[in-house]
Structures are given as structure tokens and as C-alpha cells.
Image 1 (spheres, rainbow, N blue to C red):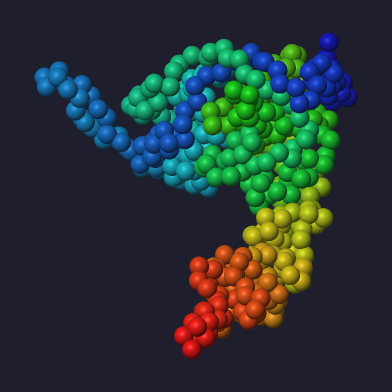
Image 2 (cartoon, rainbow, N blue to C red):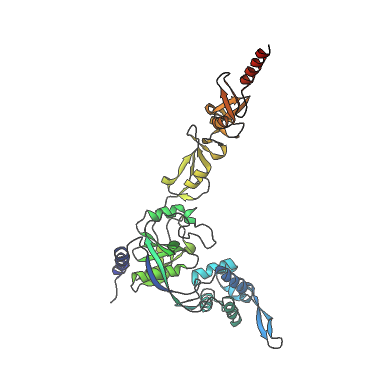
Length: 424
């Protein structure tokens, strides 16, 4: 039976409602058994790109010396394919460095050692031939195989613990929330408005991974009219493709899994490499527009984008919550806002320059600023109430303070007078 376009659009959403919203429910951790294969690290892919682009030496076994010798130099893609470079569009330029090569891998074949399209070396060779008409030599393919040797050559069954949520407001780091460079995810930084916009849109969810009952990774996905689209995964081990496998296993239907372009009409939304993975019944689907309405307001200090309602205003400038808390402080005395760099620390907290100059003094003993009504001058020095009580006693006779371990001057004078009267 051939499904109509309308049935295609309705079916994937109805499957999601049935299998996720009705059966599993949101925020409930479940076990999912799926398949995975080892993933090649970014540093190894970088090395592959370096060797392929700029050439490398081949090690061959020498039977006479019983060891490996570097026997010959193999030209790299740039030097060895100058004819192809001249005849290929300028789009090839962006893979002509190791970092660009990593990007090319992530866009075309990803980092899994083995998937339904075959082993990694075979997929890389096919991708270079398809996109740039570059044919890898046998020596080059063998060298790549040596570099990635040890990552394993088979697909394995694994069990993961996951949940699905539409509350995307957890703290940065609770579910890894890092990019591939190890830095904090931009959804908790300059693109925080993206996270807020998704959290306010009922079509957006997160698929979250757990290890030892603690969050270990996540990816975003949107339940749209034509597909469920996953994008921007964050996990120390698993790629976006594994997240897609898990979600397709949960749906338990013969949905098509395919890479597509993912974008938002508002250029202020960030999608890794502009690509995602769709779970769909529409074999012709090649792109997906997220349709998010994002407020393009910016923090005056860090330039991150925020929703206008989440910005803090001071002295004609707008600040995100983090920068506001860092840059602006409320005076503990007059309760007015001021720049933190202009504040002075006191026993009451930070106070502005005006309040400090007119209402505070330094304690001679503890060197901390206190309100003037909590300061007492003793022997031309200022002491706070605490230090005064620790260091001095008060004489009711002469109405003066004297060191706590000594006698008051008036007592000593009284004893002298008594002795003088006795002697006289």
C-alpha cells in the first residue's frame, strides 16, 4: 500500500504519541536495547586528514633486517590530485586542512567504525569519490586502516537507559552539555535564547542518556509534520546516529532514518554542521525547517542572545542573568544598583562609594568596614562593636574604655590616693 503525503505526515506523529507520550510517558527512565559500533576519536580523524592531505611515509616489513622500514613517500590528496582540484568546484577548499577534513567526515560518513553503509575506510573512499572525484590509492586506504586499527570492526548490541522530556531547563552540565571541543554548550552561552525558545515550543523534546542514575548525554529533537528530527547531540562517547537508533527503537516502527539539512529561518539558531537525522516515512525528505520564533535580543557584555523578557536593564544597557550577576551589585546600604567594580566590601555586604564615604569607617583591629553607628573611637582609633567588646572594658566611674586585661586609670589613681592618706 502506497501512503499519501498526508498519511506520511500524520503517521510519524501518531506513532510518537502512541509509543512515547501514551506508553512510556515523559521523564520516565527506561531501558532500550539497540546496536552500536566503536566511534573513532576526533584526534585520530585529524591525523587521517593530515596524512591524506599532505602525504605520509609507508612502513613496510623488511625480512632482511626483521623490522619495519619507511620505504616510500605517498603524495597527499592536495599534491596527488591537482587535476581534480582544478576541475572541482571551490567547495573542495574547505576540506584542504585537517580541521576541515573532520567537518567533511562528520557531514558525510560520521565516526562510527561500522554501519549499514559499511566499514569506515570504505565509506570515506566512497565519499571522496562521490563529492570530489578523488580516488584513494591502495596504499592510502591501507594507511588509514592502520591508523584506526584497534577501534573494532563489528556492530555490538548494547542496553542504554534513557528518558524523553519536554522540560529543557536543567543546569548546564547535568547531561554533559558540551561541544566536541570540550567547552560548555553554546545553548547555555551565546545561544541561550535557542534553548529558551525550544523550551517554550511544545514540538521540541530532549532524548537524555543516563549512566549510574546520573545524566550522561542528550540531544534535541523536534516532532514536526513530516518527520521527527534529531540534532545537536552531546555525549562523551555516542554520536547523534546512536541517539537516532535509540529513538527509532522506541518507536518500534519501520521509519526511515536519514541525514538531512536542518535550519531555522531565523539565522540566530545554531545547528551543528547544519545537519540532523530524520525519522520519517518520506523518502524524499532532504531538509527540515524548525520554525522557531527566537527573540534577537543580546547581552551588552557577552553578546549572547536572550529573550527580551529575560534581560536585566541597567544604566541604558541590557544584560543576561549571568553577566548581570557578575557586573552589577545592589548596594547593601541604599539598595541601589551599581557596577560591581565600584563597590566596597563591608560587614553588611557590598556598598556603593557614596554610602561607604558617608556611613562607614574601618575598624583599626579587624580592618573591616562597619556602619558608623557600630564604631566607637577609643584612644583616637576606631573599633567595631565586636572588637571593642573583645579588647576593652568600660569604666562606669570615669566613663572610659580601658584594655580588658588591665585596670582602669581611675582605679590606679584611687589606690595611690589611699596610700598617700595612710602614709600621712
